Image (cartoon, helix red, strand yellow):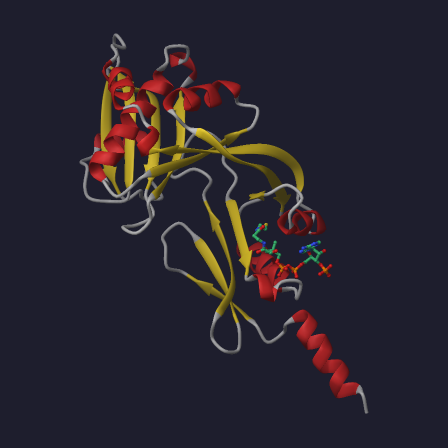
Length: 270
Ligand SMILES: CC(C)(COP(=O)(O)OP(=O)(O)OC[C@H]1O[C@@H](n2cnc3c(N)ncnc32)[C@H](O)[C@@H]1OP(=O)(O)O)[C@@H](O)C(=O)NCCC(=O)NCCS
């Protein structure tokens, strides 16, 4: 007599009516939606490269997972994660969660390990001292030359290949320093679209044989200036770095970036 009710309760708790659907709307990014019977999207997962383009630095793809607050604790996040695991070709994935949050409990429950501090910093253009920025960009770095590239980032070409090609309209700005054509340092910013005021910055990366010459600060200052010229609607830039990278944090602070939040980066071995 009670069986139908029991069945209904089990189904509600585990939300078996919500479909997990793969969506492919952005090149290089795998995405899934959790779709309720009403057709509304109540959760999503995505797996994207940690770096914006192929690089010699090993990278672990980044998982983003979100479930609408009123739909949580019904297993939807777990089902989205299962969909990601079934499709992923990589051996590891990483995700950033706020300390002591539901996201952290979820990660621990699902076997994510090795938490490392990751700080997110934000630069707001109205706080940038233009004269200081100009001085940094114009400072002499004997033997080195600044170059820029703009366009949409392809998933196959690295920084060197892009810098050899022509610029075109697109959502990314790449600024680099080279010595006689030999790439020494670079930094990239990607904008989200016309309505999104916040760009995401990756780097700067300075190659080992070119370190100690303040090239990271140089390319970053030049990127900040160029990004605003190409995308005037951008009003802030967010970047994430390993929490123990004292040197890179010092460079960011010099430029006007300020700590936004500290996250914990967990990794899952697949
Ligand atoms: C993290 C998140 C995606 C979880 O989604 P969800 O649909 O609630 O997850 P599930 O129902 O599948 O939870 C699975 C298990 O994770 C753990 N968990 C999830 N939320 C928890 C919470 N608030 N407190 C304690 N444990 C929690 C539990 O062990 C849970 O199993 P149980 O409900 O049987 O106890 C959701 O809380 C969210 O969108 N948070 C904000 C974004 C975020 O932090 N994303 C990073 C996640 S990698």
